[in-house]
Length: 104
Image (tube, rainbow, N blue to C red):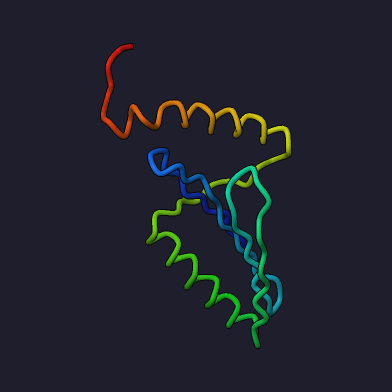
């Protein structure tokens, strides 16, 4: 059982992910900004059922905060495309924040 969630907000410059995987009695979570080094934590549970319950609880919390299901990055070649997308979002951010949608 595993899931990959993303949270993207161009105005707030937020582009992050959160993933989780249940393996046996353990729940491994990983999170961070997309395209950068991530952090990881392993939750050691007393049973597989407890690990699944913790997984479901945290996934529900993340989705309530605006995270949406997605697919993990396929390989590191995608990182340059993500960085270019972030650069474009940085250019567009002031226009969106000021609601300046002129054709220019």
